[in-house]
Length: 336
Image 1 (spheres, rainbow, N blue to C red):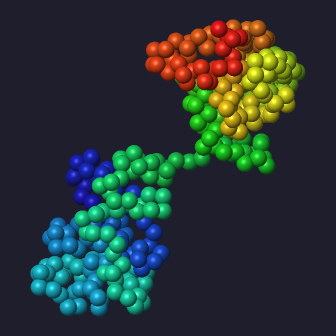
Image 2: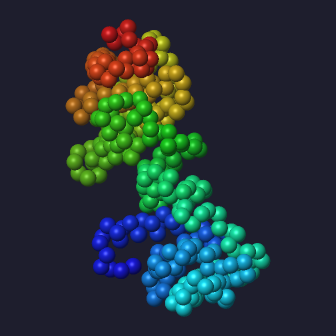
Image 3: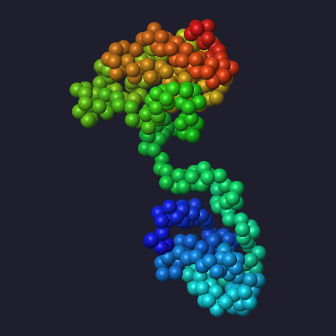
């Protein structure tokens, strides 16, 4: 690639090379490899593009062959001596493994070409999509998937909750489905990425004098102790669940660590509301920790009513009252 081309065009070509990287395990894959700007086909360590050959239909590796072998062995009239010289250079630069597979292929290489020359295809989830019909976000997702790495917090929670198989795609969506509050979504994001600063973490960096729980002052304040196992928090969960069950939103009496920390994954009619309530209780617990006060159900109910009224106002403004009352139906009489 030339070094003096504008940055935008350089990045376009680099993105093209990355997205267009396809399997070359079979003769079919090799024949359908695009020649131009292909990092596997280089001359003097640079990918190539010859406009004259491109305009004459030499686009993929299979185009360098006819029914009996390489075109240069018996050139057609439309190719000039320069064209033949360039095609010879291309054939010489094709990886040796590809040439070996093509040499041992007994059929006609051109018959392996699957799409018209003017339809450029790119791989997308084990399928090939015509470039002109591929939305830009699909290309973005391809590039993103090749750069993304699994968060370390996933390993942390997978190890802690083993042997349960955690459905992370669903877990990450829960706060967006159950709540419209940015602060609650952000809060659950911090929990899922294990970046909630409990006293155990704060003590390690010298920000607090003790790693013990802010409420019971008996056990190290880990994320699991703070939101699940602290005696004061367990009492709050017990009272809140009794309150919810009385209203008709039925929680299991022995709500699990997974339900509290990650969310309820068993989809039911009440799952959206249940996850919202769990998230609100956790946020109330953490708010009380920051304010250095014990978490009480009475204070939580006040917060819950405020959230309900806020969502009601927003639903009126956006003409979504039907969805609002479908979600909050079982708590309307208590919260109104």
